[in-house]
Amino acid sequence: MSKYLYYLMFGVVAFLSFFVAGAEILWLSAMPWILGAYLGNLLGFGVVARVRETRRSAY
Image 1 (tube, rainbow, N blue to C red):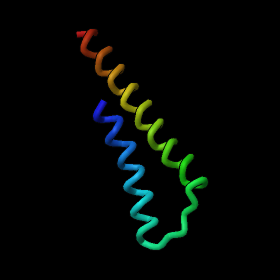
Image 2 (image 1 turned 120 degrees about the vertical axis):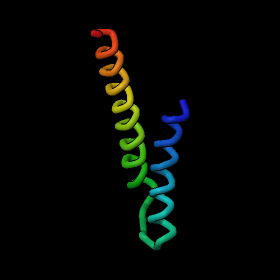
Image 3 (image 1 turned 90 degrees about the horizontal axis):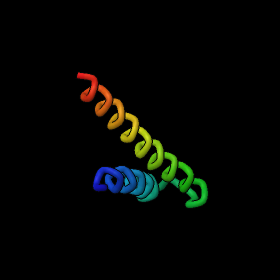
């Protein structure tokens, strides 16, 4: 569960760093990016875990 929280917080920190640096980012424009990064990493972890599990059971 902590790995999912890690990537969600990573997206939020990246957004806030742009915002603090002075980039004018609208929340409505940034939310799809943050959610996409979160879901992409969630799916990526799922695929890697499944591949590793399949390889372990093959041996």
